[in-house]
Image (tube, rainbow, N blue to C red; front, side, top):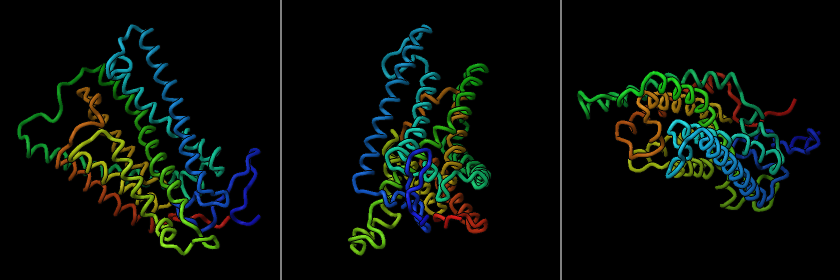
Length: 328
């Protein structure tokens, strides 16, 4: 069967990306039509809004049954329970985008993970070990900058108490990895590939136009992923620049390494560590808001810059595949 021919799998004819296709172009199969990515966005939004309504309705009902007092900005009346709802909602992006790729775009859901059509676990673990070192560098710059600006001031607020801390830490360790991974699958995977699918390929009409040549490059997909990632956060000033740098770097790294593993590893470690620290004083309720600081931005620049350099070197050293392989 020639490359790119739809392959029956479970009764559904799935389109395979052509060998040599880079990550951001995996949507450009023989099934591609200009309207299909738009339909995929509408379908994904509908599914996610349905999940949103079901989860929030269930959370409110459970809170009322248990004697909680939902109201105002609180879904359940409890900051920790609200955090659970928030993290679960974000984690639900994973099945939504995977299902959309399979049902609407008609290609294997694994192509969202990497050019090899699967999540490359060994490469993910290598990236996780690298991420741990880089997150340590981020914390060193963050706490060092705080010590310079506010000498003698405590880094954390008042301890919430043993039971509250353990409960919050359990929620963080259980759910934050899925929340961080979900953001990567939705923005560095789903969104990048939808945008990267535009631009005529070899043998197609209009392939030599300036617009097609521009769209075939990873630049539009990388920029869109980074900008949307920043805008979806309720940040301002330093914090907005912070999250924009992170988003753009992870988008570029996803394209360069041919998969989401590198971005997922750093995002998961970064968020897990910061949420775990916020569990100490209960400040997780304010996560994802604020204006940030120059030293937090500097810490992110050090973390991301070092991570990109090391991951690029490791990917070359280990021969990590960047394009779709020729089928055996």
